[in-house]
Image (cartoon, rainbow, N blue to C red; front, side, top):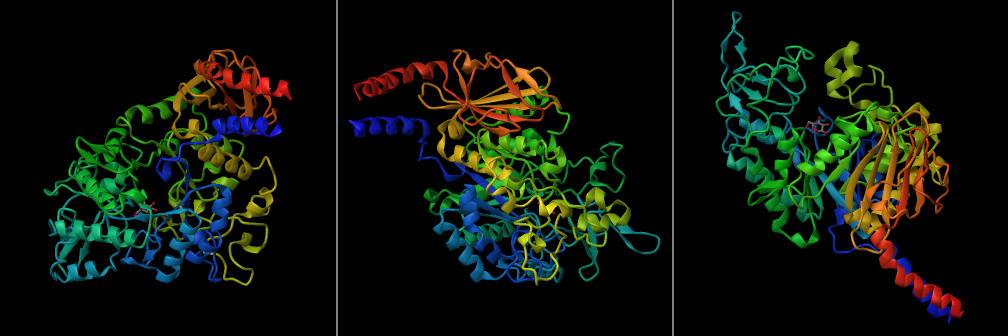
Length: 598
Ligand code: GLC
């Protein structure tokens, strides 16, 4: 008799926990962005490497993330820390060699982890052999880059750039090359000449590079800087933006009608998607794009009419629009706007930090960063996390002397802190040991200083603390893996007053648990009546699961009529909706009958 009861209970638990297994891998997990220079250094040179990632692979498994996204590890003179690539098919010695890369792929797959690479299609390094041959006008490379004659010569006989186009990094986007006697275009750093996408040979080269890495077994790509792929071929001046916050040599001072978001660029992305799908599509390879563009243009990357595009463009709205001081209504709008702009059946995603932005703990403060993590992990779609978010790492102050990011260096000692991205790229804080466990004690000094807070903020200190950011992160990845409501449930968003933002993830006509996340944006505790949240209308109880600063204990049932939400807190509840309770009733009856028979 006991065995029968056990079996019935086990089946019941399974109904609550089991999640669909036929979804693509990126729909049931979290993607973890590794910045390889800063993850783990195994050869004591002060810079992280591929084998450093290999030795830490079990960490990702225990954290519950399912895939890694690697910032570029390709051969590079490192003028833009690897985003300036001089050989797209070689590994830079800083990170190791080709064998290390193969080891990484194999060891990832042994653990059922996926490996996704950053791919930089817009430009190469000025030290790439294509560029060197292009300077010499050696075919087929002559038109691999965007070359233009000078407009004229100035009074001291110096060549004047063909037009007023500006680089994202500031100053003219044109650089004169004496040898070729022409200007080349660089929409980013001067060491990053733009590839010419109106040349079909360039497109084919880049597709072949994608094929090369796919053959090596990688599971996908993130294409960066894609809005800049195409330029108008008339090379006319761009109009002024009339935005007074920008000086005349800053990129924002122009309106980029000829260099960004050109209609022709989307079909190139759709062509890249064909490459992803052409081989072993059943393996589920992922194509993401990073596009800083209007919402309308961003949505075009999903595909248009009969063309399929990226699986998703990365959603940066929780980085660019959500700030301290955002009201609950505005936060709801930030989330709803992505959801309603997506094409039918498109897959959403959320990202809260990257190698180009201040860390979430520094933007919001450490009292609220885990609340933001909770939101990003439980909203519908793929969650992408930036290394260190799981232990609440903060930006690190870097002196002018230690600054390496070209954006900081170019700004000079007075202004570098306004532009440098170094603060969010410092080594991962593994422990309170020397160099935070990033390098061995006898190693060379790490390439960027370790944050002074590493004695308190580190993985080892959080591992066994059930209330740590790390423990909460683990609980969230488990929910993504195990709960259908998190993987595919509907989203509804609500506000209670100015400062309480609520969202639910629920399944229709299902016996399974739904999820409700309640976020308090205020500096004060609030007691809220959540009973009017539509899917709760039955008046049933809610069960506290996890959260930040909570006065409830996990598993505690409470009435939604009066819920205490601590200042800057975020609470996650599980509940069964009205219809669901009805559906569960016969099963509960069976259990109680059997228990009575015992
Ligand atoms: C991407 C990278 C950024 C780099 C830029 C230029 O946006 O994230 O760090 O500077 O590309 O290639």
